Image (cartoon, rainbow, N blue to C red):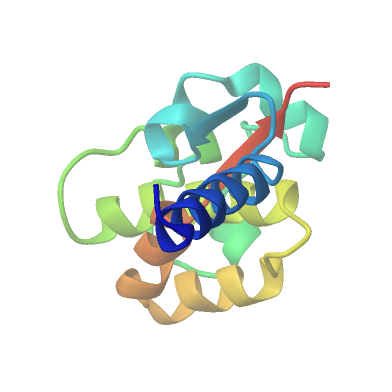
Length: 132
């Protein structure tokens, strides 16, 4: 076997060893979209939110008449204001749960109807829980 082959194999093995040392033992990824929050109302209390709170009061809007709760908002189906309510509520909950997100920016996005921004918050909200 040539010296070049031995060096090449050694380099590959060293690379694999270094890469594997940065991988946690086990990671669990879950999405924090509207269906996650709609199906886990019990988790809302852990971030200080009552799912019976008024949607419009929470976001400083006047979109719904009659008024709807945050739980009703997260369960809305369809486009338009229903999509805004569903996605905005999920993004707000994500922001309260994730210190890297800004709840004020989420509230502003709901107020101004920035759907792409809200959907992006929900799409990019993935939590990695490392096994200890």
